[in-house]
Length: 483
Image 1 (cartoon, helix red, strand yellow):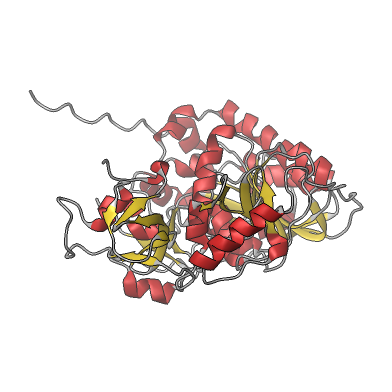
Image 2 (spheres, rainbow, N blue to C red; image 1 turned 45 degrees about the vertical axis):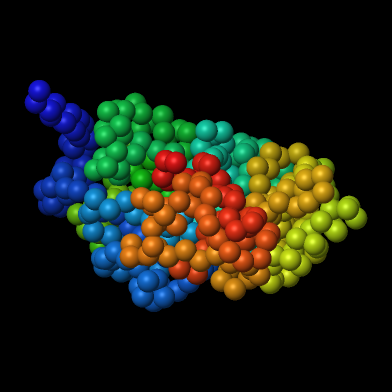
């Protein structure tokens, strides 16, 4: 029986194309041709673990061009190879992301030691970029309101190994009520109509309509108004979308500036291919036009290697928003003497690095390592208040997977290093690395006890040596091969 042909891609909405033809004029032909082309993928190196030049010496696959606006990233060529299943990805050495989306963190430009909020953080691409730019210091709150998206956010943050991230599951309104004007920088990567993703997201094509654009603009304005209250005087707010619609971009920012006159647009750098913001694209009847909106940037797929994107940076030059009360956190407490003993016994036997005692806190039976600028979250829903170090059992401490990915090379006493190559001795039909990533036990001589498993020297997960075998503690949800 003949194979069924693949379903054809849904067409790009005609009303959208008509609008873009009117706006782009002479550039429209190149734009419409680009929308029919293949999407561009990008790889961003985790500079918390290694430098881009170090990654170039170990990468097993070809890298494309450097991405001009992100000095730790490259395009990657179209390939059947699964970059997301390579063990270097599982070890958190890189993140896969649309190159245009990589512009947000450099444009917001958070600094080490600052307090930063990513208001709509899932799946975590921009959060991990912000954490790296902050060099793992300060405080980065990664908030996601949708429960079903929290898992992806947590996995990506854990893999990244940043020690400054707190994950919350809250509404923007509750965050503003608690914190007030508290953050040095706030990122609002707003939910939008997704026009910039038409090359890669067929669902966005199907869902699009003028009514959807109008509805998104209303929702974005409501979110941005709340986000503005979270920025401290002198702080910065970056508003970004992955759509081309002027109503969702310049229009939303213009309305915010009417509501909050203490915000001004900061002119963003124009990297090659970037286009200025286009306040002239707003409806002629719209009285909110503001010439300063030309300081925003637009990314188009016919101008850059990436998808559609918009970003506008706002500076809060005044205002008197109250500070949040930030009362104590009931679910975090100091270790008791039994827990101190269990932790110290584990750390002494397993680790070669000290953790600041004041930043070690207990939540239930879990031990966390808090960000250096941790603050009180009161009754807010905190999913992870830092690095999950492990869990206290009745008579022992068991390390958690995020601790393994937070550790640097050389910070564990007992290590089992597995090769990422294909020429090593195989165990049956699997290499030892494949067996580990499948959740299988592995023959392993050496000292009994907790062992850090590495791939080519990079921390990957935990195992426990018992009588010549390594019992596997790689999380089931992370396993990429079937047993």
